[in-house]
Length: 367
Image 1 (cartoon, rainbow, N blue to C red):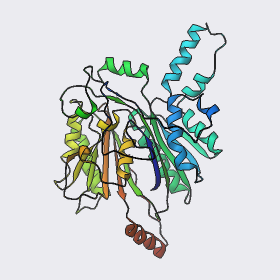
Image 2: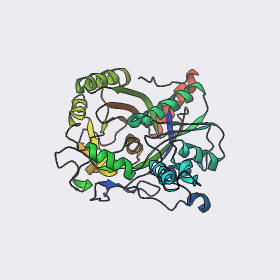
Image 3: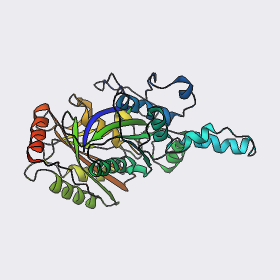
Image 4: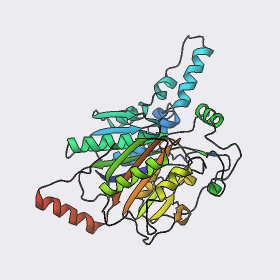
């Protein structure tokens, strides 16, 4: 499956005019998305949108406004939870009387994909995956299968999650987030339990055409376990099947989030890679949220080299073409994505090889 376009709205300058060389600092343990002006959304529609729908559509419009798509696939853990709580409060406040339906309509997880479809006048495949920390990976897998079953089609794949006060306070009481305030720049400099909250929305346009692609997603793997040894074994098996047996990926993007309780999983994964593989981190940029692996994929597609503040361990290569992404959710849900970035010469060779043999190659996905 090939990526041809991508867009991301995050707590950093990742939308349209991108700049991740310098970090936007947050000191309240909440990294909120930097929202654009939404020039592509009609004002009358925009004012009725909850934040999750707003940033989801905002990230999608640059990808689809000049290119027709055959379907929309979104991954989210919570959708518009803030609007859901507003609607539930209205039931109590108005004694189940005359309720305003806007908050209810905007609160359902599939509202994002639905609104994108309405604005784009798209009547094709439209689905939302709600699988907590594996929502985005399942959305990718769905697109993977659709592209394989329907050659020549292309899909918008996205992930959206926002910080709602309801979810934030529940997770804070549960110990997910730190109680002491820190700067996101210092996320990896302190060792303690908990992380910092974040949010974001990202979209990709994918199909089965290698020509002019940005990158190719070759394989996806998801597992459920709390044993770090199983993570190491699963990653070794994943690399053995998907990566050149005599080599190793150029870049490993780790979802390390500053929570000491989860370090064992990331260290187990890091131990699989040789010294010449670069190890990078990204959650000091966006905070942690269930579909944060989507911004890791955005970084993997990013045209410029990753800035030094993302690099945990430099490898032997500065240009990274083969990349593995790993993220986990609460140490229970684990996802791996393997992709390769393309240069023009690579694409030309791959395209000619496909055309010369009459074959089209599809990556093998694993669960």
